[in-house]
Image (cartoon, rainbow, N blue to C red; front, side, top):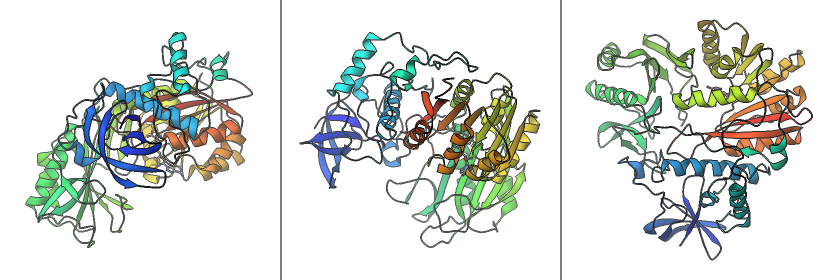
Length: 514
Ligand SMILES: C[S@@+](CC[C@H](N)C(=O)[O-])C[C@H]1O[C@@H](n2cnc3c(N)ncnc32)[C@H](O)[C@@H]1O
């Protein structure tokens, strides 16, 4: 069977007599031998038996547990090709879910022109290498090589004299901005703890199960986090701290979270426990401090619920500060245990710089930052804006955001805790107006009420930061229908070797073109 595309989980996609098969481990352009293992009405799954003709982009995955783990899906594809695949996934989502027109000028290799969009069915015609649209894209690429050499938005920063020519041809989706060293990038590890064969283990869930496989090293995790998790497991074994058992609901230690501030070297350890009392707690803290000299904060989070959600509602400081610090650019951030903080600090700067560029600030604008977390984007933009309003649902994150504004001497920001879909409409009713609205929602995308409010507030620009291309495409469609044009989408690789891709999109009000 020939593999002609790639699925959203990184599986190869092939067709046999018009029937679509997903093959884990196979790559586009490969010829493979497979065994069909599951058949559904419109598609099926097959096991890869042999690669008869390998892709030129196939590489040997460096991680010894790659096949069992499932945390990474693309280690067997060269990094360069991963970046192309991710851009193609974004394009496909915009076209198929958002029904948006993507400019062909920056199209890349047709080899990866066949990603399969989640939530779509076999009626979504796969974009095969022989597909006329791909051929047209390639022809356009050859003929219009001068277009968009750089990833700069074709709009003037600052808002006037926009070049709208690219809008006429569709949305410009730039090549994915990747990392020069795409390994060991994660600043946060969240490791489930359990019992296997009588001993405490901590690592990852085996595929399609909750059986924990013990793990010593993860190649996308910062080395410090690996060392912290190994130390905590060793100490917990030494002190006979009982691991949690998901089936019985008994045992104490559920998860270890380690967070490392890349630019400060500070470390936070959070022990998520099924109950309040930790036996030998002082000894445990002392041993963690001894074995992890860079630790600045040791916390306990209590989660007694039967749930897959890692954190419970109560967090206590066992030792040290309730936050650690890190910097992005020249801004310093306090980060507490349950606050969201981007996991790839190197690429965060790339992402936020793009958001800043797309915001087109000249110094006097009012900006709203929806889903602001600990105020990272708000503070990044505040130095270039008149005033910034940030809203976020997690109260501790808003405490961090206020502390971060103070820490950096930034006074033109206000933060409010609450759901963006309630707080922003209330601001609107109270007469707040915005020149730029930035949204950075979780994977499910923006709430419909928030999108309606954005349309009612009519900011000149909307900058949409998204970790999920399918909800991005859905929401862009709504904003386009409400009078905005998507000028550009910039994929940023925040998660090398996985199929996840972050994007920053710029929308401008159609009646201003700026
Ligand atoms: C992808 S994170 C972005 C955070 C921040 N912009 C950053 O870059 O660090 C999404 C944030 O939205 C918050 N959130 C989730 N649902 C929300 C809602 N309905 N209203 C406001 N914030 C929400 C989460 O707690 C999280 O901090």
